[in-house]
Length: 67
Ligand SMILES: [Zn+2]
Image 1: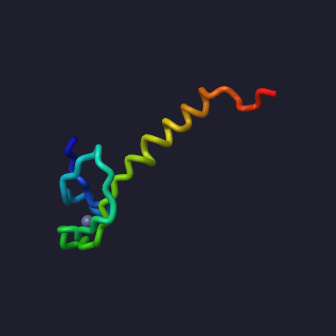
Image 2: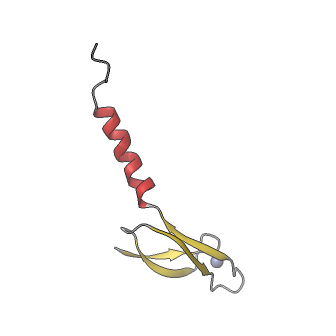
């Protein structure tokens, strides 16, 4: 889904990103002239969703100690 990526400092809409795609290493300058910071656009979907999945998987897994 396309969503606006907003400046984390001033909230100005900077770019549209697909929030299902991993994004990193994209730098953009905030267009708000009172802010004007360089922002790295990052969308780390791995850490957002697979963390929760990994926790669930561990919780459901039976203990390895079978002895
Ligand atoms: Zn800004």
